[in-house]
Length: 484
Image 1: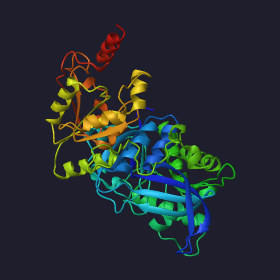
Image 2: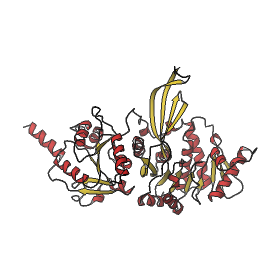
Image 3: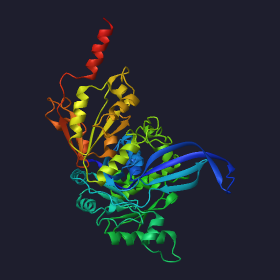
Image 4: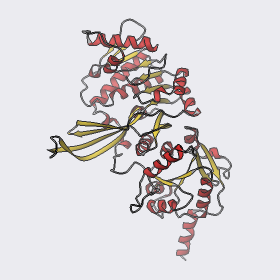
């Protein structure tokens, strides 16, 4: 591959709530589900990106993330799966699909998140990465990303093969896509069927109609357990059957199909070869247990905890207006952005807060209208600095930081780097102390977060740092004095 596989589209937060049903509700004749576990995962374009990354590809996801707990959780889950998120702003709430399940069967699906908002403008870096892609998958879930004009212009201009997975509520495919991958029901909604026509005739007529309307190179209609029907320039369609019986949970099978076809095209496969590979991959996916069994192992433990996002919310005795955690940061982001303000963020361990830390925080706060501190959790600090650190717990560190007048909110993260947290917060400016960058701090591009900030057009800066202040040195001196 000459570049990353780019997945572009709407990302949802999927939540599977497992439980047992042993009784009916006393005030209504409906079953009562006693929850036993709950697992969150990226849905929509996010799921397609996770599937592609699990196959070893370099994957970039261009999607819209909201300033809420759902957006924060999605950012962390995608980062854990190895997906590089290039976020767009998303007004409103994160769309969620919650499936209530018992004994492997879905009892009810609860959708929330409201009407979709118009996603924000893409940065120059987003447009550049689309132009450098080895393949682009548009995973449209009808919520606006595939309709964004600048993105559509970039898709029309790219030389990479484009796979378009459409949605009936979404826009038409950009003219000239290599492959469109609707399922049967989507084809019937997009192209009226002839009464009494057979299943294959309906799929073929619909595929040819979409191919002409969208000026697409080919259209593959997925037929569930019966494989796919491919229509291209010739008059005779190609039917690709499944390699064997594939019974099971089909949730996510369409995303798996589209992701597999995109990866094959990125490797130089013909469209017919890509569709055959996609049918085989989707069949293995369903037969192997579906989405729960197919997700990368590092996503499996990502279970939801009532009242908490994936980044840490640390209650402080029920204090009203607590500036620590996802909810506080989300509220702050909405208020500052609604007023047209500048969001500034910085990060670190901040173990044994000292004058050097305070100088950096005060200088950072002067650069914008709010300052958010991304704080390494206890587990993150131990992984970076060893088992004897931190000296102060994440709860104490967050409380001390949030008490400073120059700090508006604190977000605690578990990962080694703040990349996932930054993809959600999307600060306009990321700040580090001057001793951090190579060469004494005069080269801001040395910051590892600089590449992440460029994804949405953010900037990285270095501020002066007070010499001679170091948490590690303080700990060493203290221990030396104790042993005298």
